[in-house]
Image (cartoon, rainbow, N blue to C red; front, side, top):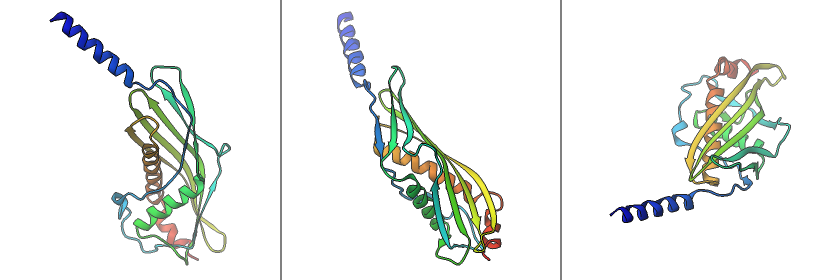
Length: 200
């Protein structure tokens, strides 16, 4: 009986060890925004609901690296880069979120200018991976005359759990962070009023 138990334990330990990730390679992630149906209607009613333009600028110093992969029990790490333009991704996400909440980008109205100040992911790896993403945006509403009516810095975060190096898990985590930033943008003090005040 003792021998049988020891064999079973040995096999289980070996199986667990075999499933553990033993290397960490660099990854390149295509940033693709997919709207979450749960975000529809979270902003409430609006008396002014149009923008003339949405413009996003990548203001980061290093525009390639977006994160790092680390192993929980070994001194292994690798960088994560973006395979697509982060500014295009931010624009797609913000426009999608605004559209779900009744804000159309078709004019007339103010311009919404956004600067991507930071974007960072972390993947902590062992048998599976935990994912976290954060980003910071500076947003500004500008009247047709060029007058700035509103300006705010916004943060967004997201988290996930799944297989190591999963592109889908990275994308879901990043999109959750972008949705969180978009929600914080529309809920920022003065944003709703500025949509009307900045129309002319």
